[in-house]
Length: 282
Image (cartoon, rainbow, N blue to C red; front, side, top):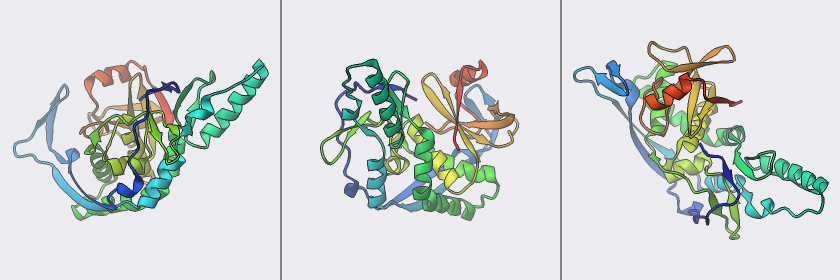
């Protein structure tokens, strides 16, 4: 997870929405379906003959919806260039910029020089667009015999994990040639169209998918340089989880293929030390 200044390197040219394939065939392996005998640190010891369930479905991405999602997110770099004569003017302009930025999914820090993603805004903005896709994945899993809520969550988590890990650019350029500050994130529909994302963008996609079908409540758990998802689920034996607001939240690592309830040991030690913050997703 990144918090970045508006003084940024040149933008990478965003792929035009009309270049995206409308229908994408998705194939992935659900790591949650392996039979694990025990864990040795970060290594799962599997039962003899254990294998993962293979899932496959086609998802439809409406190019117009993808384009609208992209255009809705981020602020022009020109907005961040403030001219003022008095401290009162500066304070007023920063307040106005903070308000405007929030309507485009960007949070501004009190000093006015750092911008970050408004995770709640992105998830809320995306749930309607993701509803049919989440339903398609859930239906695919049910045809494979998935029944429990944890199983269905695992199908969606492994779907997101299968996307390539890649850092999004910190800017994009719109059709008018403007530099648009995105704080190093992409909207979930754009993440699907690109078929890649980092910890932030994959977590946003997962949260949007599960919230779009009211499958499970979600929080984000942030450490210094990383972001996890926490799901409101009773922990199974051996699950890595945290307590937040009197409830248990099971952790999911979405950057790579990790089963529900297991995160890398180096990050787990940070979590156990209490050096994390929770971002509630409404």
